[in-house]
Image (tube, rainbow, N blue to C red; front, side, top):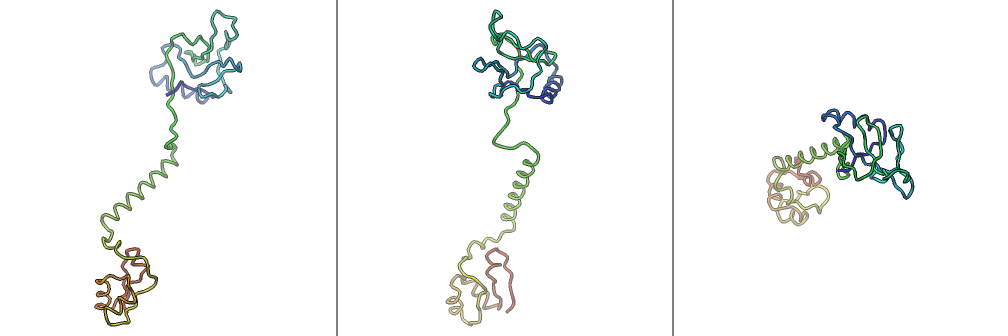
Length: 193
């Protein structure tokens, strides 16, 4: 977690809602803003410059050495205005959760990942309960339809070397053929000769 970055009135409203929902402010709280002396500008802890601010009327002050101590850190007061203070003063802190870059949190992305998970689960379930255990024994080498015009096991085996013995026997016995494209996808569609 990092100190809170408040870059718009919308974000400030969200901060107010969050603070109120959690019991309200007890006192001022540090946020993620600071004065960068190298460029004489205020930055956020992610190195971006202040584009939008909600400074209290007399702020920012004590940045140029005119005060006893420089006030380079930014706090949010109980009126939800930005104020500077010396960084060594103890205050509560207002933090924000780091946005994840490894997984998306917006609804379209979650929907897509959910759909992928569902399809994967369906495929696994299909394989477990409906898949044919001998489908992986069929070699993908040939193209076309088995030729069973021959009457002997040897003739069929010679012309269709990819067929297993039990498939040759089935073809001879029942005069069916296997259409290879169907066989390779495990559909076992039989065509009467």
